[in-house]
Image (tube, rainbow, N blue to C red; front, top):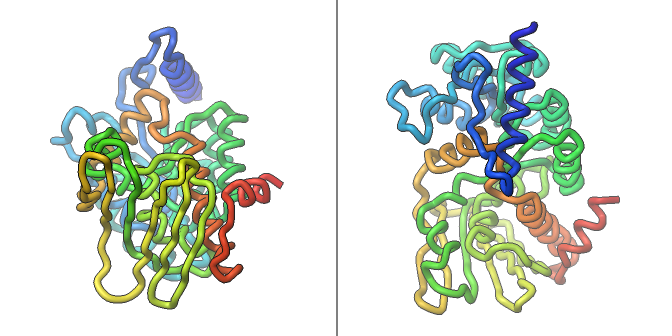
Length: 337
């Protein structure tokens, strides 16, 4: 028990120190006894848990990924979405074979780890699970979808502030090399962008939260924050969602539900028209996650993530209003109620 308390206190002090940017106190999160910080996974109902563990537990991992082994996992995870919970037995067997201990509860997990990957595929469970993680003082990456409602998204960030715990969420598509290059000026001043990606619908979530989040987050990666309103044109096969930014620029997401599915897009800049894809896998996201665990500094601001989810919620409202424009301000105000 004493070792566990020391480890927790040390990690919190390291995290707070790393966040004191003006004082130059940034430092790696290390355990009190110089062991590697222990990573725990909540939710074995997504392929991400296996892919992430393979990369993080690789003995030959490069320096930017080394030193953060997954040591424990709690399987649940979705309990009501069959496409997710049906995978739990398979992924549980696989992660045990990788030397990861499977535990019986989130509380058991939190007693055995220093940082958390909240991988539960069902966003309906994230608020409840995240609250336990924050209360235990553990930095957390929360995989997509961050939640199953905009109200829960706002509450998750409020709780992180309340418990003074660093947290972030992102799609791996945010870290496609071309998307990052465009965000940092490769195409010059951006005049607009269009992205595309799968947009399968899960009835328990707002339409774009389930799969459309990937293409929407790609759009925000290159366009940045400042979206004012959204219009959505919906058909059974396709979604076309157009956002108007404060400076009048237009950003469009095309959601695919038939035919060939892929991720990508085009950015329209003053210097060039640049491709946003292709998708390059999970590694670049994991580099950012490990950097986040080391520094306690989230690479994506709460403002940007909340705006992404407000965009998708506004798209649902526009669908209900036959394509009429809906402001993100309206969605956020309702969520905060």
